[in-house]
Image (tube, rainbow, N blue to C red; front, side):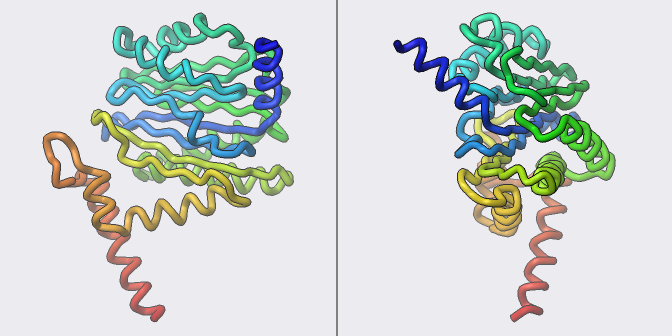
Length: 261
């Protein structure tokens, strides 16, 4: 009976629409993930983080053990495909899931199970991995890949690249009348805690709300101090490129606020 219940849960979870992108910025050595889903609180289940080593995602039928399996593998291995295979081989039902992983050494990997519903697909290159299932069209994956590549070439920080890509995906899904419910943005570095860990667990336009939260996060001085604090720099001194962008955003926003009052 318990096994049947697990299969029913897997089938129910796999009916949702979810798209996730994981990426590594070699210039700042930051790792990031952005996800959008028609499922409640996908951001609580999708991310798999191994700070300083790589970042990944599990979707379709979630399996929390993937966090443990991948973290253990990443402590001993460096190649993304080898790390991901360790987890897939331990899974009792890998065909119910999609998983991706991007390592800091320039490798990435992805796996899409055979029982994931139609229009499930993944793409990878040396710096990112993208996977989606339950999509109205596989064109969504191609568009997301092209958007991320274009935005990356324009010099935005990784967090902005991921969020802009997610905004494009949300617009595309709205055009096909595919309702989304949750979204998340997760960015980390070598520290054992994230720079950004922002989520919208339940909303009609979750990425739109995530953008509002992200922008407010950048404006808040105290929040930024905590976000960029490290064990060596506990006062939260920001990396120079991001610090300059954040300070510009603060000045611009404050001028706009003063002009609007």
